[in-house]
Length: 340
Ligand code: 1CP
Image (cartoon, rainbow, N blue to C red; front, side):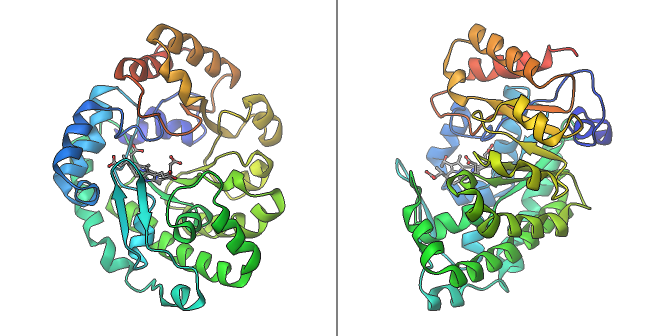
């Protein structure tokens, strides 16, 4: 039974025999079979076609042995649902139509969200069928701040300078944009849960780019609203990369678990959040570029640092594209052979 699954038992706060393991961006980029599908179908075909979504989402369960699947999709579907065009450009990453002026932000419509996400229910149902109760399914969304980064910047960036300039120069407009993203995100998360997702993760990938003061103004309030609207339905993991200074506030949102980046020591998070909080993470993804034997040693050492239980093994951010399948397997095997 899926309710008995290690990953969900850990999220519920149970003491388990070993930590469950999955990793961010596990369904894609480093898997040779994924790269073959990538040659044949566009990114959003892979997301929206139920057969492709099922095949890609299930791939790391079959090939790597993870304890949870994460729906194949992208955080940028929220920008699309608000009416902005998003292109995944080979070798460059996502390129988006931006919304920066008052008129552009006013034009974004939350009304169309339900209609845009019509594809999600059949896609998620197909994924659940493919998983056949072997492991639970994680649905996900980006945080409103992280979405604003892309909607204002128009693409990935090392510093998201345009996005930061925008919130400093136009705070009211930024808050209107964040409100719209928040509403669309709540609708989308509910659609994912209705379709059968067993847990959710919110990626605040660029949270750590903000100062603590700016985080409490431009990221946290919107996360709090999303959590209040969805946390009664399924357990939610909050991953705010680099926002170590906000761990206490993130815990108080009612998250079932907090994701840690590799620059946040487990002992620090335990001190802030206490021994009962479930923590997820946090191996440096570049360690998976090492040989399998070295990966296994480093992973075991990382698990030791979290103490006995209340831990979901993961990386501190997404798996790197150059990672070998054998090293990814060594990471998963280290967690699966661990005993408390
Ligand atoms: O065609 C391709 O393979 C393009 C690469 C790709 C993939 C495989 C993109 C473009 N998105 C995805 C899938 C994806 N994205 C998943 C599902 C796969 C899985 O995790 O198993 C998930 C959960 C995401 C989430 C995502 N997208 C985040 C949050 C996680 C993180 O890494 O911080 C972010 C920031 C994005 C934006 C995005 N989408 C794609 C790229 C290359 C990027 C990063 C752009 C940048 O800032 O440089």
